[in-house]
Image (cartoon, rainbow, N blue to C red; front, side):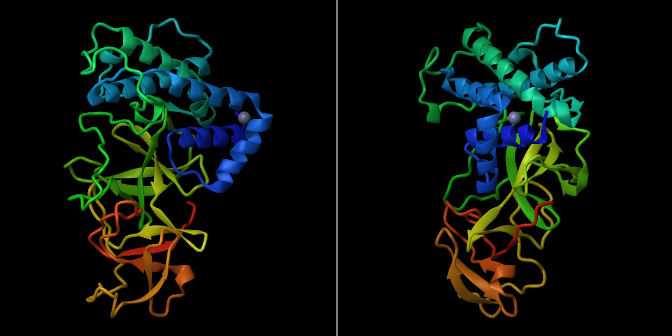
Length: 340
Ligand SMILES: [Zn+2]
């Protein structure tokens, strides 16, 4: 597949998941869609998927379905790669062991090509879920005509609540733990789409050290180059390869990424100020920071003495729920994003 197709389909799927796509990527995708039938078909498939009525399934079932879909897609792609079309019946969703997803390491050309097969697989799995007598009865009984926005996300690249601990959106007022942050080159990222498979052909761009959501010791893991140019990275985790998106805020139309001075070793740990800054002792930021303008969300920013605001700025603790650093108990520091 052409690089333009890879980027376009990544952007389209991110948009369908309601995730942030840069204006630049969105426009490139729109342009490409006008001239590429393959990508238009991809988008149509996605839309058809979202239009399907979905069963009101319990969250743990959705997680297992997502793992099944990802595994199926990886298998389909592997089959296409070797040009031996499937003679195996794909396993039903309840037959797949959620803790051991079979993510194949596929080369870069195949991995995004898997998405077409993935859409097909997703339709198959949704139908299986709807029809299978083995599926636990949903509380509302039968297939519900859930509004699209309220429907469980069964598209392939959704943030799958895979495994034993489904990711539940944090409540807006003062959560006890931080989001699922990880750190790469001292900058903070949060989980985005689960990719259908991983990418042995994708170059490593460094390492992250994290235990993800586990209590075990953190491990050093290769961070891989993202197919998007939005500053995201790809990190193979317990549930497969996932996009991790930079935690950003806008100031004067520039994206600034959250930087951290501490070592975030696992999900739920809050970033702290870079060590070169002494924590302010007063709510007005003094003696470290000086009150400055507001960002694109109207959040108050603070500059550090001797640092032009274009090079970085601080934000006070406890920003509201809509903020990219919502409820952080610490002062945060933001720097112009550098695409890895
Ligand atoms: Zn294309």
